[in-house]
Length: 71
Length: 158
Image 1 (cartoon, rainbow over the protein chains, first blue to last red):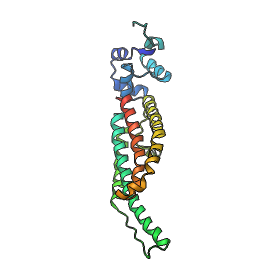
Image 2: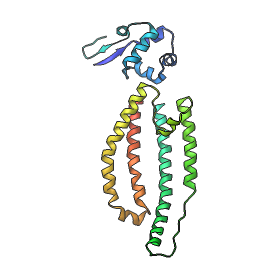
Image 3: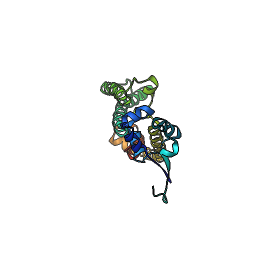
Image 4: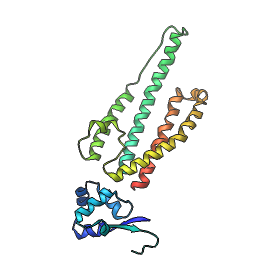
C-alpha cells in the first residue's frame, strides 16, 4: 500500500510552480517533485499544509493506493 | 542537489583527512625520534612538521564554509559549521534521507571497524613499506563510512 495524491493536478489548476508551492509550505522544490511523482509520502503536517494551500480536505488530495486500487 | 552537495562535501572532507594523515605521519616520525631520545637510545631528536597540509586544511575549511552558505541559501549558523557539511536537512524529506544514510553509515562501520583492526594487526609488515602505516590504515574507516553515506543519498535523493 502507498499514498497516492493529486498534488500535481491541483498545483497546475492553481497556476503554481513547484517552486512557489514549495515556498508556501516551507520545503524544497525537490520534495514537491518527489511527492508529485509518488516517490515520497509527506508527513501529516506537510499534507495538511498542502491541503490548506489548495483549500481542499485531506481525502480529496491524498488517498491510499494499493494492488486492488484502479484509480 | 542533495546528492551533489553530499558528493562535493565528502570529497573535501576526505581531502582534509588525507592532510591530517600527512601531518600526523610527520608527527609520528618525530615522536619515534623523541621516544628514542627519552629512553636514551639517541642523544638528540628531530621533529619536522610540514606546513602544506595545514594550509590545505585551512583552504578546505574556507571553501566548505562558502559551499555550505551557497547550498543552504541563507546565513550559516555556528551550530551548522560544527555539523558534517554533507548533512542536508532543509525539510522533512531531506531529514528522512539523511537519517537513512546515517543509519547505513553506522551499520557499515559495524563491519569496517573489526576489519580495520585485523588489518592493523599486519602493521609491522606494512610499516616496512609505508612509514606510520597505521595512520593510513585508519583512513579506511571514513572511506567506508563516506561511501555508505553517499550511495544512500544517491539512491533516495536521485
